[in-house]
Image (tube, rainbow, N blue to C red):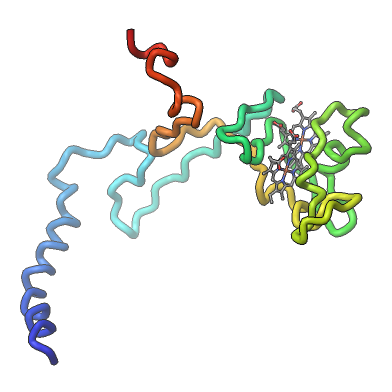
Length: 165
Ligand code: HEC
Ligand code: HEC
């Protein structure tokens, strides 16, 4: 063993109590709020009830994208819309053929482009599984507050934003 390995071993007895006391630290500290989104400090053999599953947002209002390349989120119910080898229920509304009848936005041209950059006559296989990229939203609040600012906000002068006199 090299000398610095031995030195690391020598530190071990001091490290272990430090880890243990960190684990116990919460017991003396202020109790975590029960409505806290983080897991309360339960013993690992105890089970706390799962929080209720929040409902989907299905108000049919299209949501602004945070940046132009973002796959738009889905503003409607997607329950039981199946995607199988022979049938893609999303495309029964979003394909070019059906948008007039149902007034759904058509999938954009990028959905017809294959990985070689060729534009196909039908939706490209790599865009077939819509919910790989497009997701519905729920009313759940983020566990950690979201500080995201879009580019327009970042590049705007403070006077444009109205947060300075
Ligand atoms: C019954 C028709 C129908 C079906 C089926 C359907 N949609 Fe939609 N979709 C719409 C309509 C209409 C809109 C426009 C907003 C609204 O009315 O909800 C929309 C909006 C969207 C949007 C938002 C587009 C934007 O620019 O904001 C996405 C993404 C989307 N749908 C994806 C899907 C996916 C993925 C599926 C399959 C899981 C699907 N849709 C199935 C009719 C449909
Ligand atoms: C690999 C990721 C990916 C998959 C899979 C995918 N999309 Fe998209 N979709 C995007 C992105 C990114 C955009 C926004 C930029 C663009 O149009 O390419 C978009 C845009 C859209 C839009 C808005 C088009 C517009 O012009 O406003 C609709 C509607 C949509 N997709 C529906 C679908 C449906 C339905 C499917 C399944 C058949 C699907 N997408 C599969 C990534 C994806």
